Image 1: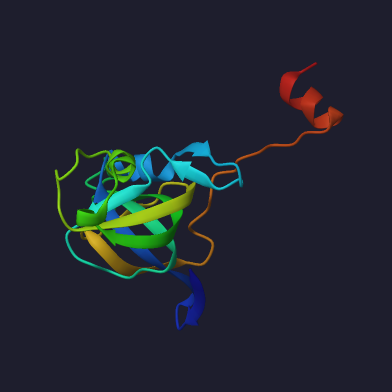
Image 2: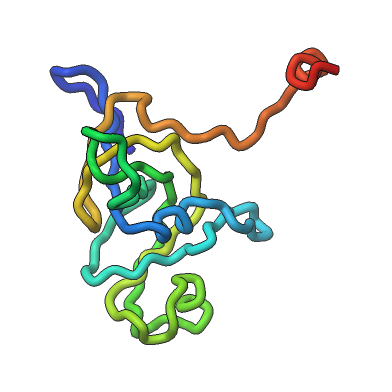
Length: 160
């Protein structure tokens, strides 16, 4: 993600991967954490036909999601960290399982993701695959993961 300013004000630029549901939700929902504290989604590998070299943080968008009338046909789902790309010919059985596919079911390139973070859904209209997108600064917001309350906050929330 890069923050830039143009004539319309500050914007954030993301590399976005637009894919269909339920894969978008499976890539962005944390399912487990390894011994080093790195989190992974229910699916951590996406298989695409073309080789791309996205780097770092990616915005995952769902294509053809239930849309708000007049705002496009998809929505933002979450952010993930891209860390590797590999030909499907070289996949291990564990990597096929992490992609949610049977060995040899699809050919192409596997994109490996970690540290999924859900974001507040925003309507978008995107094509499939990777592309650069811009949003007004602060519009892409992660859902909070932890809520810490002191004794006073706990009483206010629970009424006790």
